[in-house]
Image 1 (cartoon, rainbow, N blue to C red):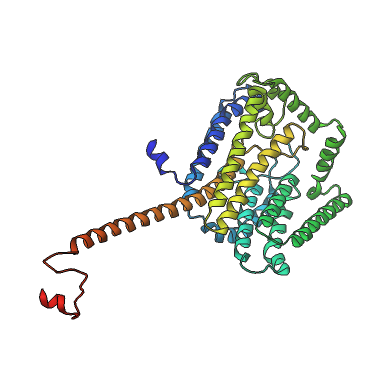
Image 2 (cartoon, rainbow, N blue to C red):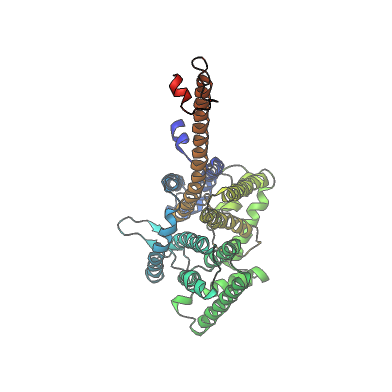
Length: 429
C-alpha cells in the first residue's frame, strides 16, 4: 500500500481531497439508494447499489492513475481529432439514445455487448474544454482574428452544443458558461465575447420559437419541461419538480445542526433521484448542517488546489487545461447544492464524486487525471532542477578539491606560473 501511494505523482492535495470525497460518498449512496431498491425489486436491499458504486469508484481511481501517467500535452492533439468522433456519438444518441429514470430525454447511449449506459454529453464537455484550451494557448502569442476564431473555435463549439441542447439544456448552459469563462481568462477580446453571447441568446430564442411551431416533434419535446421548470421556480406553481424541491427542503430542515445520523434519513423514501441529483439534501438530513458544510468545504479546498496548480503550471496550455477541467467540476457541485436549497431551478446536475452514476464519476476522474498530470509535470521539472543543482554542487566540490590539491605540488611548481617564459613550468619539471 505504501509503495502504491509513493507511486502516485502530482499534487498530493488534489489526491487527498478527491479520496475524501469518494470515501464519504459510500454512506450517503448506500442510504439514499433505498428508494431505487424498492422501485427496482421491491426488497429495499441497497447492498447491490453499494457494490455498484464501489465498482464505479474503483474504476474511477484506476482511470485517474493511468491518465495521470500520460504526458498532458498529448491531449492537445487528441482533442482536435476526438471532436468529430464526439459529434458522431452525440448524433447517434440523439437518434437512438435511451431514456433512464423516466425522463423524456434521450441522453444515454447503450454500449453494445457490454450492457453499460453512458452519457455522451459529459465526454463531449471534457473534449471541448481541452479543445478550447488548445486554441487559446496556440493563438496567445498573436493577435486574434475574429473571423478566423469563428471558424477554428466557435464553429466546433456551437456544433457540439447544438447536439446536446435538445436533450439537456442545463448541461449545454453549463458548458457554454465555462467556455466563456475560459476564453475570458485566456484573454480573448471582450467585444468578441459579447458578440458570441448575443449570438448564443439569439440561437436559443430561435430554437424555442421553432419548437412552438412544431410542438409535437421529438426533437423539441424538452422545451416544455424547461419552460415549466422556470415558471414553477418563479411562481411556486406545484408540479413534480416542486414536489422534489419540497421534499429536499424538508430533508434539509430535518437535519438541523448535527443531523439524524447515518442511514436514518426519512425523505430518501419519498425523494426521487435521492442518490444522484438530490443526494446533497440526504447528506444534510443525515449529517446535519455540519456535514453539509464539510462537503462544501472539501469542494472549496479542491478549487483552491486547482488555482494553485494552474498558477504553477509551466505552460499556458497547462494553466488553461486545469482551469477548463477543474472549475466546471466545482461549479457543477455548487449548482447541485443550490438546486437542493431552491436557489436554482431543477437542473439534473449530479454532485461530482459523490452522486451515484458511472458516467459522472468516470468523466470526472478523466478530468482529474489530466489535471494531476499537469501537476506531475511541474514536479518532474522541479526534480530535474534539484538533480541539476546537486550535480552542479558535486562538480563544484570536485573542482575545489582539485584546485586545493594542485596549488603547490613540488617546490615552486604551481598552476599559477608567474615566469616570463611561458614554457618555464614545463622545462623546470
